[in-house]
Amino acid sequence: QLQLQESGSGLVKPSQTLSLTCAVSGGSISSGGYSWSWIRQPPGKGLEWIGYIFHNGRTNFNPSLQSRVSISIDTSKNHFSLNLISVTAADTAVYYCARRNYGDSHFDLWGRGTLVTVSS
Amino acid sequence: SYVLTQPPSVSVAPGQTARITCGGNNIGSKSVHWYQQKPGQAPVLVVSDDYDRPSGIPERFSGSNSGITATLTISRVEAGDEADYYCQVWDNSSDRSVFGGGTKLTVL
Image (tube, rainbow over all chains, first blue to last red):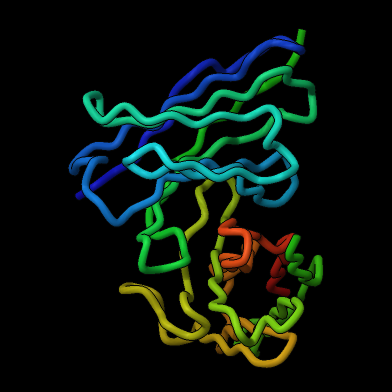
């Protein structure tokens, strides 16, 4: 059964870069027909979609974050990654990775999430 | 960009019916999905494509969507249904996902 697992630094200093990886196990990230998204949730607040990537590298991002975010995919390591530059305390959140079947518009599989705190 | 509006909170007594709304411009023309999130856990899909229930989701959960409002209905509410609920659509014009602000369901 396919599973997603987020990993990365749990503490990032202001103005630095937040980097996270989502490892895909139990299946290949290269199989067509899926997009791979990052979604975040600040403490006590709602869900915010960050962006997605396809296996061919095509991406799209939330306009509110577009100038600071990048998502990449490494099919040889079966994972995809998030980079968010110039972070502030407002970027403190639980970050989730999730899968969407291209034929659908919902997220059918989520990671457990990882908390990233931005603080000096 | 597309906006989804949910009430911040809904309260209901056990055994009663809870209705959580999600408003958006012509939302009836979109596929609406609903997620349940309990504290410290990742969201779980409870209704997809307006009214479909994923495997393992009780029949008590149902959905509807028309005009400017989509609704998640939970019948015979149980204490274990207490959670945050989020609606979500895919905005095809921008090829981006949008979430509603979330509704906290309290079981009295």
